[in-house]
Amino acid sequence: MTATREASRGVGKPRGSYAKTEQKRIEILDAALEVFAQSGYRSGSIRDIAAKIGMSEAGLLHHFPNKSALLAAVLDRRDDQASERFPIDLRRLGGRAAVSGLLELAAYNASTPNVVALYCILSAEGTSPTHPAHAYFINRYQAARGIFEDVFTTLQNDGDLRNDVSPASAARSTIAMMDGLQIQWLLDRTSVNMTEELRQFFRGIVNYDI
Amino acid sequence: MTATREASRGVGKPRGSYAKTEQKRIEILDAALEVFAQSGYRSGSIRDIAAKIGMSEAGLLHHFPNKSALLAAVLDRRDDQASERFPIDLRRLGGRAAVSGLLELAAYNASTPNVVALYCILSAEGTSPTHPAHAYFINRYQAARGIFEDVFTTLQNDGDLRNDVSPASAARSTIAMMDGLQIQWLLDRTSVNMTEELRQFFRGIVNYDI
DNA sequence: GTAAAAGTCGAGCGCCCACTAGTTTTCCGG
DNA sequence: CCGGAAAACTAGTGGGCGCTCGACTTTTAC
Image 1 (tube, rainbow over the protein chains, first blue to last red):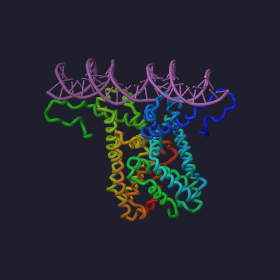
Image 2: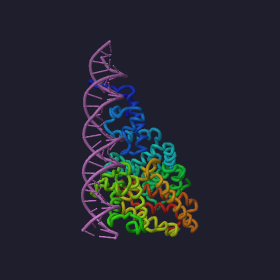
Image 3: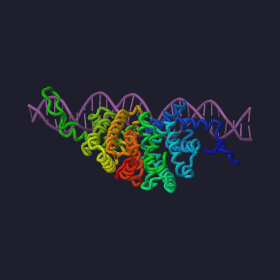
Image 4: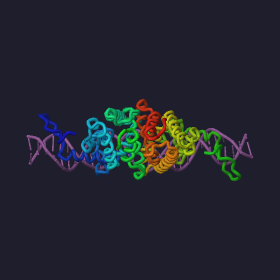
């Protein structure tokens, strides 16, 4: 996660990894994302992932101890990439700027369909308590609701959120809208424009022109 | 689908099924719904379904030719049951009554969590074009959008839908809201009240007190 | 240059899968 | 109450799965 090959160790024997190792890990994670996005975690196979990058299963499993660790690494990487490529701190922006940020986020998501598919299938699978990503999604949604609630609280304090809409409700329903639009969009990408539909949704709960 | 054991055939040899056959089919379909709801289609196994009702796999497969036919039968049965147990013709109701009907539908859904889980996981899996329920969901969403659009058109003609909301957009976003709320609700049933959240959503797009 | 760690692979283990074949058991119309 | 169809079971088949093991190759610190 940090930078280069295990950094400099003080003494001891261990050697750290080769120069190309990190690149290989990334190649694996990219392939895993595609496979999990298409087939889900439960039906996506390590065999398929390995084949996609011309590697043996055993070779792949040298880098990740098992399948669920691989999934965890895929999700970690996505979270890292998201904050790199879309570094918005919604709480900091607050109010109208944060709402605009959400619209930009929806537009950005529309440019990465396989990531959308990944979260769509994994969040559905993850509703089962036995799924390895169950806790991840519980936390993810709790965190998202917290952030969104703060954003809408700010918006309301600015007089920009309708008074009969509670920030908590706005948070829950905004998340629901984003998730729900993704399903229709994945089934038929011409059926819905996620950004415009989300904007229209916001028109129903805010007090300003958007 | 109709009523009793193949009805009366005129002449020929074949004998029709036993008295308990239909009951057994239903038992299988109920078990299949539970398994598919929990594990999805791809990871849900015929073995689990058969075990759940104390039957052998081969015995089960006597009633359904293969796994995907079983899934199709589960979906058929659900559609039949839905129109029996919740026989609302939204188009007929039109306008405010139809909107109320949707709120009742949300409340009804909250009383059948495994059905909600079934559609949640299957619609996510079904976004993949190779999934046996892909066409089913394409059709289902198209039909739903059509019905909802008619409902909101009526509502707008009655002056009950905000003028800056198109019926088509209201249809898409209402479906998205219902789907999205279900995910949060399945992850943590205390996190969201689907009916109230949907009502609040409608407040943003209608012109009357709801 | 070399030794040892890191990376890769082929083979295979035990398990689960959907589905089939053949046989036995259950039902029921006559 | 009996003959034959329907229903159910036992026993497989071929294949995919996650993961392990031991041997081989590549890299790299010294």
